Length: 330
Ligand code: WQD
View (cartoon, rainbow, N blue to C red):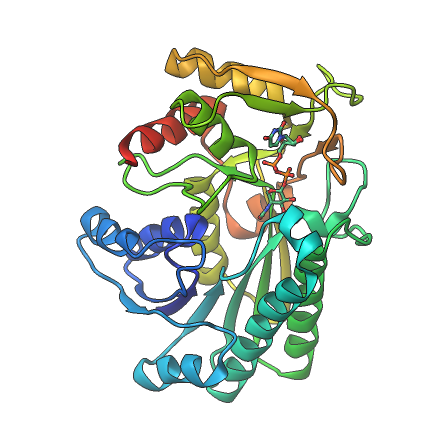
């Protein structure tokens, strides 16, 4: 299939592009480079031997996106492009609502117009709000604690209503847990512009000496060691889940958790990183981050049953591959 991958030079988009090409799909990438680098395009062709078509556009601009639909016979869309920093979304809500919602609406409108009937959306476990884990797809969603999470929940509703109103428009809403790690080549990985928000890029930059120490955000949670517990999933497993989702897309609206079903605490992750990579990561316990929840991990059984997909890589591979990318990434 010819797949339009928005945000395809980003962390998850680039890894998904690799897996799509490995599965003999043609990939067309649209990315505005707000949180990615053009160098990733060459790295994708080094890894796969194929250079995807690339459009440096803002996917909120319907006319720019329509050019892609005119130039290519698109069979499906995987929509990653979006602003995703939780903290930033609290200080810049309008930027988040505009960018994340208008891009989803523009792409959906063009898919209906051009009869593109497969749409896979990059959603997030954040939409569950603060509910007890394991989190299941049929749970009622709770209000999230930040505009970023709200844009994911609202985008899910936009896509759900669009699918209900347009026979044949099939949607898959993929709720990610905590993507970490990097491709085994060390050529692509998590490379946020600016100060990292997420745990793993902070850990790798501290290990590299670019940041003095890691702040462990609270150790008074009701968890195994008091630090936050999350369901970390290797980005390559996550990417493979997207390929399965678009290849096995059933009519209507399909919702899947993409996680491992296992929880890991901050200190467990940091200790695994230090042990596997034989490197020190100085850290200091500080206060909780507002909006953080204690524990979040998936019930991943639905994707396993319906998509024939299950995360295969463990914490050791995640911390090994994340560090290998950081060392390669000048
Ligand atoms: C993980 C754990 C922190 C940084 C968010 C979004 C989610 C998705 C992934 C986009 C928590 C602790 C973190 C640090 C720390 N985003 N931590 N020191 O908050 O679980 O999820 O990112 O798709 O939608 O909500 O991820 O990596 O920020 O935090 O101790 O410097 O690490 O308290 O327990 P989070 P995270």
